[in-house]
Length: 437
Image (cartoon, rainbow, N blue to C red; front, side):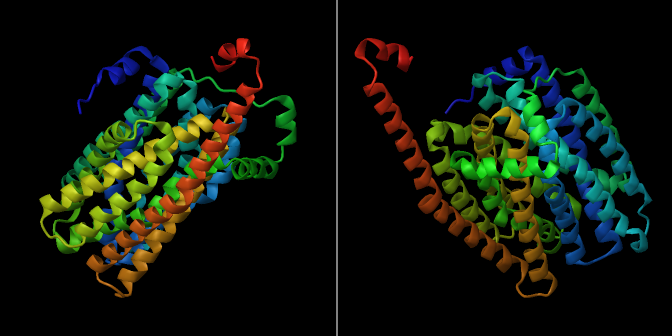
């Protein structure tokens, strides 16, 4: 299978507004992944507790979950470009606060600062994802999301790898300063972009002036539209196990590979490469969007099988390869579910749909990491066995998806085709060509 890079290069070259949004994502994501290892290093420096290490991930995810409902309401009601600018500048200031952590007694600041940073991220992420369909054509949308995922993986790979070395060689303070500056540069790119947005009507704004009403309407919309609900659940069901598995790579790098931040950087780099390659190959294997819901179940099973093998190996190269392959499936799941939501959710509900997806995703990941960290903290199972248990659970979730969720999608598609055919059958023969066209 040949990979044609030209459509992606053309998209960047000719679509100026998408390019600026894309560059903002690259810069801010690099700072995030460059800095996350420094936060892990601080916790490991001032505490040797697996529970405290897992807790920073839980705080990150729960903060995103807590603010997601109101964030979705805000991103549908207000100008998304302005919101992204505010969030970038605020996060740039917040990450500099990590410089104040100098002892075990000040370690609590890491959790507070992480929560505040994630509050702004909870607004930024749905605003950014909801904006992509507004700066691309329908034909460009899939390529735009694949490019965003591939860029995320490259940035993740380089950011984590460089972050591991930078944390070891430059120290955490310099890493946090670079992270803060990256948000400022991201804000400059967003400031230069033109991002159209369908505004709520005056009647809709008046009806949803109470945030709780607007939030409830978003939940109700998803509930009433199964074609939106299904892809909304995909990332959460995947991360209910993959979240714990990725968290445990931190322990694997420290206790099995005995390589610390550098080993973790290599494993996370493999994760990033897989996330970038996966959506391109996944789209070629499942080239019909009507098959994508079914494909999500296969991706869950495939990723679970790869991590089951991870639990049994010791060699860094083999482990990295297995992680890479596992996250090819993870990246495909992410892009396909995102594109389906962007196509199926109207612009005035898109922010609330994506914030609900974030809510489910972050809650599932928080529970996943919490359970894994408690198992390890209280030595219920060793890390290898814990990885194996979560791998099997992910395989079972994938089987459930194929048996219960995918058939519902097929039934709805068959019903829609049947209804359309009935409409065509009732149209006089001389007018059918116009109707079908």
